[in-house]
Length: 132
Image (tube, rainbow, N blue to C red; front, side):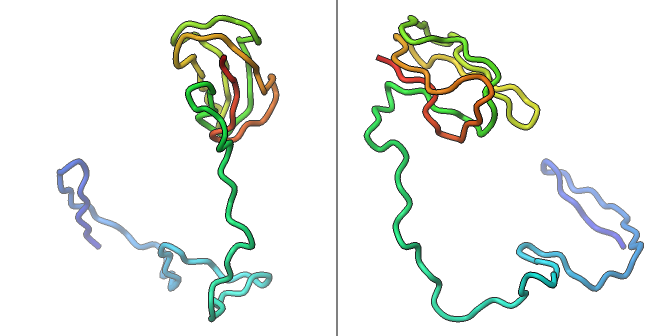
């Protein structure tokens, strides 16, 4: 079977060999049948949440906090409360999916509190450091 594939604005013609005749079509949203999970979609109205999801840290002044850019584990914390920072000073090193992410100071300021320590798991947008 011949297919045309476009990559970066260039069109390529490729030959594809079908090794097995698989009748299952894997499309977006396809879930293979499993004895523990029903494969039919229930009809009727969609149930709503009992309460709306809470907004994270709605009362926090965003200019005075540093949030986690990724979900991961804290490897190193290089700041302490009371420490004076300059822009781009290394504050924290996070590990996510075997990659290290450096969290640097967004601006000059003084550290008010550090809410994490090495080994802690953090979520995306979790407050890591507060500034004065």
